[in-house]
Image (tube, rainbow, N blue to C red; front, side, top):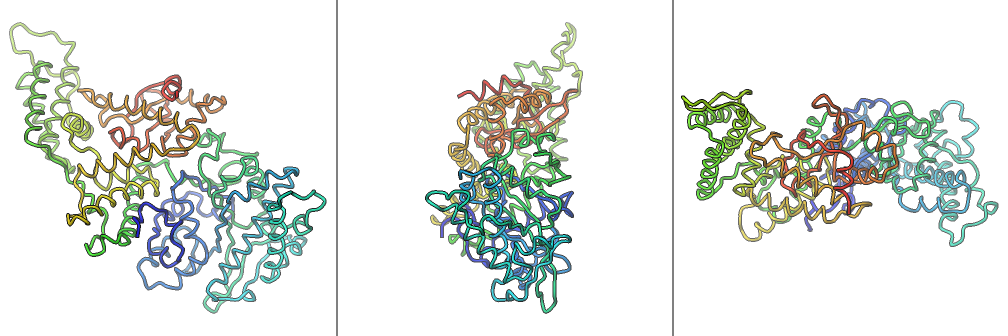
Length: 635
């Protein structure tokens, strides 16, 4: 079997049992269980937003009723018990029973074709919307009767209050009548959209023009569950709604946002379907057609949360779970007892050769002479470093790290005493105005400097793979898949599967460059030029002898007021940045306070940091302006 890490499970797995073996419950927990509006997720319209590969389709498939039922009916496996627990946490289960009957409706290009028909916008919107509703009802009935566990006669639909006038148009409340009416509507509307020449408006089939709004009529579904009557909340999950025409989406979204609708409706979409302001999460831009977020609809972002450190930690757990589920499906590993991906990409610190150590020591000695640092002062600095390394929990405390830290602190010392006057009668060794400090920022900067000075690997270990993925499941699997491919080669050659730090960095950097070369979204060339320019500058500044930005830089900061103006100006730069965010080239943090100013940080994604040799830690940035972004992104 081909490397499963390099293919989407939603594309090549068709069997429910196999799908459940590898799917991770973590997205349910990460994005839904802890959502602040969790109680309203099945009442209000929900937009689930994320970059390609963030897990939108996987989430929708896992939540479908037929899979939920399969999970609940087989609780003998640990996998199904974990999935059931996650589904309960996300609100799909209650007291061990299903609470929701959800179905996924792919919104392929067929629906967009209706927008090209020669009819009024209102007519085109209703045709597409009624077709979606008809297919939703049919999918619900298929899911509820899947596997012969119940018959149509066992299913009853419950109408919302004051909907009596609409019941006839949907075929009544019996499952058979609803199925027959949905089939007729689907057949009629499909014939309109699939016709070689669209019929005149007056020639449209009656089943395509007569009112059909089950979403507005139906409140609940009653089924047989384990010998008892049980009620469920119906939910339609419209997947890939970004495939719709933008105007068509706005019309459909507005129609689905009516407050009287009790039918759950989720819309899974990519970020680039939104305006630049919405992608940047400006409050005013999130509103649409007089609909306000949190009041009229709920947004669930599957990347980049407010509590980013917490999100990063949770993603590491989700990634580990995914990787460990995929690993047994790699044929070369089956006889090697490889069960934990983390152990195959250890974060054991690399060591440089004795020759490189001598060269580094000579470099530090020359810098000591250049900065005119007395031997006694260097001893004080070395003692500071030794005390820090003895107390830190970091596993990377190699001698070369201490030596590189010493070089950085000597440069800082020289800067801090530069204004002091030498004495004619005693050795010049004044205390700096600001005391020197050896800490994690200096240690991380030292590791980056060692990458430049001695070629010491900088990106390696499981956490680095996760952090470089920017909380994107597919991106993690691509990076992990490249590492697995190298492991397969080693397995074939009879070598250990575990990859050294150097091998890991080589694979990750090559894969990162391959991903960037494959960008094919709008403005991709300008985005690539932009991130290359920022990346090169960040690397240069991060490697200054005194490491003034600590961990290092991987972002530029633009004044918040300037970004607000850009997002409302119609400037093409706003579109460039929008697509860069939506396709994972950059990330954005708004209203970042530093130096008494409010900044918008344009952060390079983890993939770019891998390719350009930058820290994956967040917060270090270069102060720039909009003209800089325009020049950097020029083709």
